[in-house]
Length: 118
Image 1 (cartoon, rainbow, N blue to C red):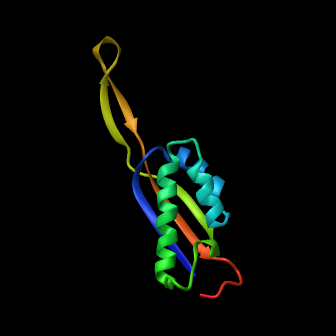
Image 2: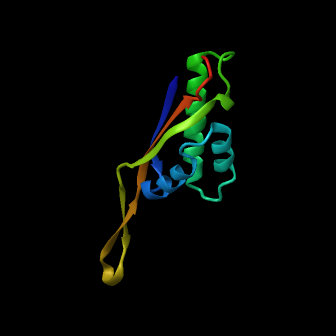
């Protein structure tokens, strides 16, 4: 059984969130949660929350007594580029320079391990 969670318009670039996604892709859920909890990057927080949401969706879908966190693995994690917020700031010689505040959409899919009956 599979479950997914989507977190849209997260502040942070898709490139930075994609590096964090590479760390947890293919790992079991407890290991991935520990990795994200002790990660020293601020961009890890949206990924951590989205993974917890995907796990909760899977447990709710299967029934609380039937499925546990240890029975799941992360099969797909990706961070796609979202819209860019453009802000202006004074630049040299009185000209305006643009500040790009990037956003990303985070997708996480989890699946039960082989041999686990739901």
